[in-house]
Length: 603
Image: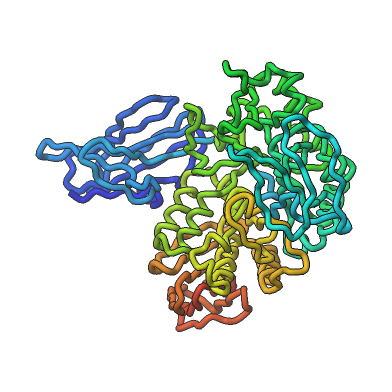
């Protein structure tokens, strides 16, 4: 029996991907030799339905109306044969959508349709290039160290100022507890002084790791949400940073650490109702870290403190921030995220709410609940760790290019388009080893640098918002925390890499198709990651070669009049309508395709 359904093919599922609540979806399966076919559909809103599909010359078709309630709809096919048997056709075992597979029993994996209410993401954000800064490690103001606060907290680790060129590490006791927090002296004024440099990279957005008063150097142990950490500066400094950044065309997003605070915060004493005290006298804490007591986000007093008229969110939006990134978003209740969004958007409809989610955010299941991030009233975007993992697997030769493309297509299929195009695309962050260290060729500096250039180019070429983790453009290395949080190497940068990132920023601003063009995957062998970005006649062909050999890629473009590698400005060979691209080892080509239209108009 010939069974086939491809959720990426409009002949079998239309429209593609996520769909608006209450809309219709047409589904079909090729099932030559089947006696009858039923579509099994399930959603939390409507429960299970078994729909008989209409035969149509070897195909079976039906149209379903999606629930008016947002959520996930799951489906597979039940096929009855003429000999009285029953087989099933569901999602593939990778659960990545696209072409499914035959099962003899009810499939473990169903196809997914994300049902959402349309909610636009601010245009400025979707068009942005971001730069992530770990504030203590980016730049000093005038090159001088700030003064450490003389306050001593009983039981708290000591704090000390260290030299800018010191390798980051942790001094711990035998139990693994931090004994001393090292500070390098980065400040908000230091960032202000480097805005011209940041702008030169083509950056239009900055994401700051926590800047509120805390005891540690990472500042995820908040002491006071209403106060800038004195080691970083003052509220006036922050307001000036936002104002000066805006003059440079740059917006600032803050880190919102609302799941937990610091054990030495006055909140623990003054608001015991916000916390859960265990029988042994300790507090429920984030992942068992004693210094990070978890907060009950649904406590009304705490909710008002964060989201109220004079709450934390509104205060810092009024001060100039253009949004928040929610730390450990999968540990924040959906109802609390909704409240944060309402406060944020009511203060500034153009502000952005991002979430730290490490998996596919459309079907994330945590704390016993299906999460609702992208149903229309929570997050605008998430940190795109699935893309990072896929790209590193490709670069390190761990998976063929077709698997990389399948992983990207799965996100495209499962995310509403607005959220997919707003993905926060990263290859490094404060929570992961830097890419120059993570690459399998890290012991070969020149090859590793080429692969970093390859990966960073892909970030700008793929759908979503490209992100530079401070220092990647300077050639910084570093393993897991704290090594990935070293001080920026001012005066010792890799100038070739900086020129590369400046070129990417320039090209991104010149080619809108890289911002809003559709993503079309292409098959090109295991070592070439190939895809197109196209929209309204504009087309960019992207070819990434991970191998150590030059590879050839050819494709017909009827009516093609020119093909130009925008990274070099050089023409790519044309044989009639066929583009013949020779891709050097460990490199990327971004080829602008120009086609002669029938009416004589070249696009």
